Image (cartoon, rainbow, N blue to C red; front, side):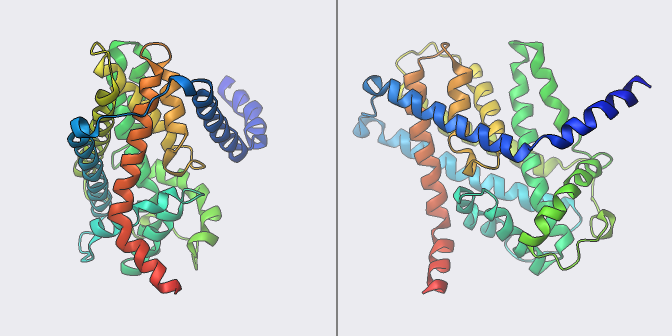
Length: 318
């Protein structure tokens, strides 16, 4: 009875909240925080790095960023297989890698649109819609699960395993049903001819838990962190920094950047959250420089792998 009353009280309140505006405000606040920090500490921030000494380390960070993109692509491929589509002959990994750069386009959804259209053309729109939208949820679950090792700092981190619990055949449908609320908004963008479909029509989960897909997502987050940690070690002057603390902060910041779609690839949000969470525990100037180098390297990896796709798009417009 009490729960019912609470639902009736909070339902009108939730309906009146403009979540789109809140996301925009959060994104702009993050960018502002990042810029203000840079301007306030401009004289203390140095990007001078001995490339002769550290060039190999920067290249190693670049290779781990490349590896993370491919691991993410294999995760997407295995998500589609988990949804019951095991006979697709097209090279899903290559297409995922090629379109990865589109996540930097303002709006943050155009890589999803390209992948949706690709899967729709070789299979069906039902599989395309669900597999494209569920993949970020896998990434989020992997990142939060890894961040849950922070339980050694606080019991709060145990709550981060909750999304992971939903990654099974019995509960994933509940998540997909929630995504149905996005269908009306996505129909026009993704060009659905008939949006009145049922989840069970084309989706047939092949196993209880998507172990292979989740394993690749774990590898994706770990590779990204290693790429960042290499950058951090290049500029770090204090060898006493706690790698586990950095790892937890990295996973949390990456997760927040992921769920704010206004930020292309989490740009600004990831960096601002990292600076905020680190606080005074580590020299923030070194963190700032590390984040800048890592962002440049990660974006360069995306650009390199996506160049054939961008070049092809350019040729079509000429």
